[in-house]
Length: 346
Image (cartoon, rainbow, N blue to C red; front, side):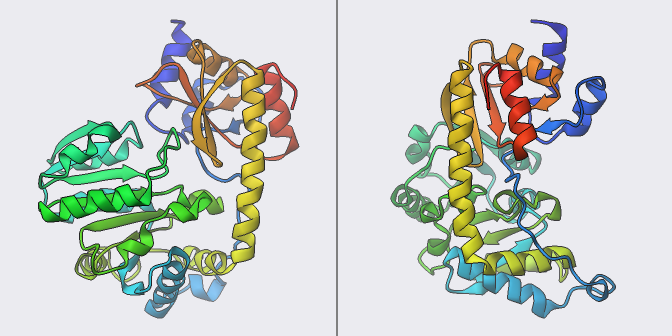
């Protein structure tokens, strides 16, 4: 393998979004960089900023409660006290192993690497398994984590199976975490509403704001959990877990149902357009959601390096050297540059 390919694959295989590393390693590529390494909507919601007065003071608890209530309504959760706003889902998923009293964790993978890393760092015996083995692990006191839709392949687990897994875990002293970071593009697949009922006492749902709304830099996410755990989380993260700007954006975005419905249709069309580019260039489609596409090619690592040379960053994987994940381009120029780098036409 070419040295540049080895360096690039090693630096970018853990997660997307390392544009600063790319700039340092490859300073002479065409500018500006086209960052397609994440699954973040390139069309950001036109969120308002907090007023100068709001920025000058600490957020009011009533504002946080309003945001959590509006998010609960959007998620289909009847009891807003079960919805806890956090500074992004990364913060939330790393907090949970510190407060859940289980020393064994099972992650259905391959998936977002921070899940297993968070449990391992917390000292838990952590195992990554395939979905086909999930049932066999529910008869133990473990915390089982499933991303739905999954990252990077977009695999969707039906709600009925998730609730079945939860019921088995609950009976054996375990817990189920469902990471719904990408579920806003297929909201009918969410189990957040179930997590808002007394029967789902051992079900935790993570929701991301930044991916679908294209505002990842605001760092806003949510945990949906039973009231005792939700109260414990609130006590640990304090009275001001999110910024005034995140509050303003969340309050506006979750109230705009028309924008959300329209954006789902736009994302679907963009994903279909990206599929055509990838297949025309010789990739085999391997999955994804309407926020990202997963593609397979025997020479994926070499193609990754050629894209870097064109100033385009996508996501390779250490567990599968034949796979690349592509986020959606933004605007005519990014589509044109990607098509040219792939040897096709936009």
